[in-house]
Length: 110
Image (cartoon, rainbow, N blue to C red):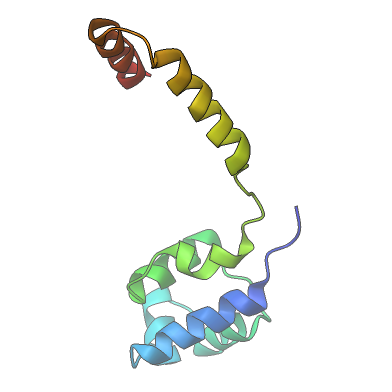
């Protein structure tokens, strides 16, 4: 796993804070930290803890994912997933309604 890009995360925090008309002092007061620490987070010189990031997201009325969405490296193999979906549908195609209802109940349990 690569390190998180805290400079980009900080920039997103800053942009969101400014768009809401909030000051670094306001954020700092609610985090019980020095305003210079908020500045350091926004500039990527300090890395916020997960707890701090959640508090910042709450203050800025957004999700933590808003700050982290560019950090994900996992991709879904849609072709394999589509092949699997098609195989399941093919198996169900000629089943009677009662069997399909039973299978649906089993899927719901899973």
